Amino acid sequence: MQTTQLYIDGRFVAPKEGGTFEAIDPATEKAFAEIASGTAADVDLAVKAARKAFDNGPWPQMPASARASALRKVAEGIRGRLKEIAALETRDNGKPIPEAEWDIGDAAFVFDYYANLAEAHEAEGAETVDLGDDAFTSTISTEPLGVVGAITPWNFPLLMAVWKVAPALAAGCTIVLKPSEYCSASCAILAEIIDAAGLPAGVFNLITGTGPDAGAPLSDHPLVDKLAFTGSVPTGRKVMTAAAAGIRTVSLELGGKSPFIIFDDCDIDKAVEWILFGIFWNKGEVCSATSRVLVQRGLYPKLMERLVEATEAITIGPGDVKGIKLGPVVSKIQYDKVLAAIEAGKKTGAKLVTGGGRPEGMKTGYYIAPTIFAEVPTDAAIWREEIFGPVVCVNPFDTEEEAVALANDSPYGLAGAVMSDDLDRCERVAGKLRAGIIWINCSQPTFTQVPWGGYKSSGIGRELGTAGFMGFRETKQITRYDHTRTWGWYLGQ
Ligand code: NAD
Image 1 (cartoon, rainbow, N blue to C red):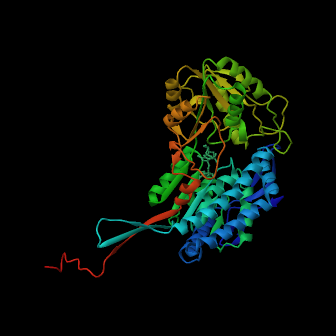
Image 2 (cartoon, rainbow, N blue to C red):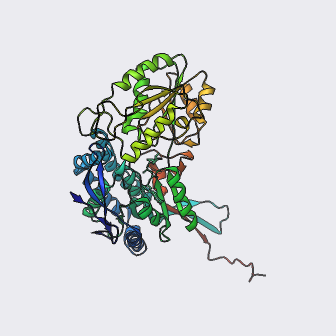
Image 3 (tube, rainbow, N blue to C red):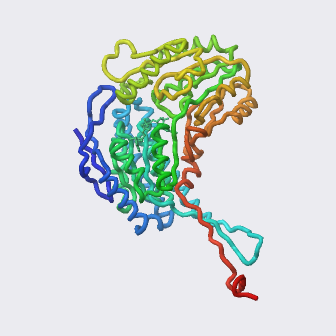
């Protein structure tokens, strides 16, 4: 069985004290690798290496084109090992291989995208501002923010890491990455690819390990300038508290309970297709999953019939078997959490329409049947709280105003979707939904070029797009006084 290592200051090393923990295949429930378990001592070495690489190293001062060419090598490296990484991601996380291949292809693209963006940003140069006073001129420019501590989840293990690593490196920052202990294997390969691309020592560091042992010391480390976190609200709160203690910049990409409003002029098959993709893609382990579906009453009975039929036809099994559309959930812990949420849902008065537990006949693996609850009380936990599994709630509505009010009645605001053949209505509803990401006539397709992030409890800041790059730059004004003049406040007449 393979044992991974930490990557600190340009070297692959074993943890100082932590040993290893097992990577478990959720389809077989068996270990397939040993993952290096970093602790505070390793985090300290990694952060100090990143600090040194930032303060003294060439990386932040390099022309953007030099950083970009290194990042393009990383993109090439990922593409060159795409099949291997995708297979590993499926083994670690359970997702179907084609979905893993999308993720890894996207990860390569993200490196290329930020390589281009860094060059374009540098070419734009500083902005000169007219101050209305000809004794002064000001310019506004940006520069690399510093040392980044990145903490990431298990649902898109490589991609969520790359959403931070690629823009941070392109922006000239140095970074310590701490991926989720439930899926760390693909990030260990990323370290190999970055090493092979020849980035200077200390620019990228990988500390695998648990949240308390490795994530917490990274959040607390005084030499980190920015914490970039993706994960649950409770952990995000801890990371923000640590950032507050050190007055560090923080970005948080947290959970959601996103609504999908379907009006009664929709084609039923199109609506069903996007409802399924909105919740069962990646096993529902998607922060932006549209897990609360609102269907206009005229369409509701027929749509429910078709939705149940299509849900029951979803092929369930190991992600590496061809044609499988729903793999096992990521871990035993997550399996127990999702089943507990379903059991609690059964006691709320909601109708369990299909699913509701382990699929029949599947003895091994953390499988949960795709589950639909209907007519759900809107104060029930299954309607309000993120389940992060293949469970969707569907409720009817009558008017557009009612749908918008129900959709916005949530502590979260990550995403939302609306479907109607009336495109004016779609635009109007999109404008009223309180969320950072809105899909019209679809749900979930995600593009690197546009910003990603949430309102309300779904987070702070934006990843992807230009915003994702600027999140790793500091803004600086330089104001110049005309040195031929005399100020004269104290020394003048
Ligand atoms: P999690 O909060 O349990 O863990 C996330 C990361 O935080 C892991 O690396 C974990 O080891 C680390 N961690 C745990 N305790 C810590 C501590 N005390 N200090 C520092 N780090 C600690 O989340 P998860 O279960 O891995 O991921 C699922 C969550 O992530 C869901 O809520 C989902 O919505 C969210 N998510 C959000 C986005 C987004 O873009 N908004 C994307 C993917 C996932």
